[in-house]
Length: 263
Image (cartoon, rainbow, N blue to C red; front, side):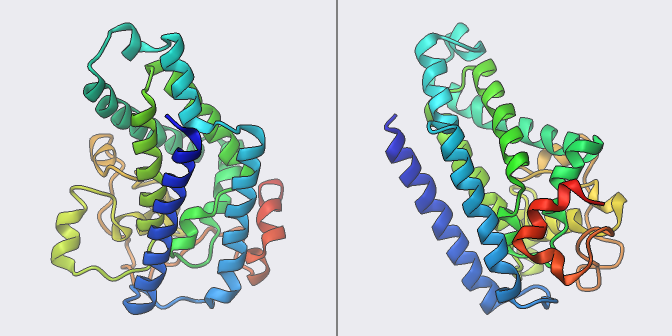
């Protein structure tokens, strides 16, 4: 697979979804925001730009490059078993989605990893830009885990590209502050993780934070009993964020980068 083409595909889909969600949030917001977009968006987007530069500097070929190498060298179970190409793509997408779910659970359960991940949860509002707000060190660890899974299963480049596009798009979508008709949302959450479902995960209550870990598929939470249908206070009244970082200054880019080392 042409790696520059892979980057163009990912960037085009991601940019389109982020722009579309931003416009949807303006048109039909689910909750009233506590802070203006101008106070939060530049810093959340700033983190995204730092993450992107950080990843490209350390790993120029990224996940698809690992998949190309794995296929070329015959690494991984799917290559050893000579699985048909179409089945390898499907299995890879499912296996990587399960791996990301498992990683998310572990990052909540282990103290040092939670310190990195909690920056994502410390946003005082919940909208599309929350879905791109991850600490660079968490991104680094997540990539290393993803690389290991790709090499272990022998994921083909097409499967990895599809998964990466889905993961990026779903992370933005399921953090969207968008209003979806209740009848439609009840059906959608059986197919994908909806904003209504994932918002529970950003509650200030720890028992709610430790639920609804899925990004793309909603089935892992149901299968592993981490699913929670609604927040106790309701979606309109629930408090977003974590107890440690409640001051307005914590929304600033410099404070976001330092949060894992404080508190």
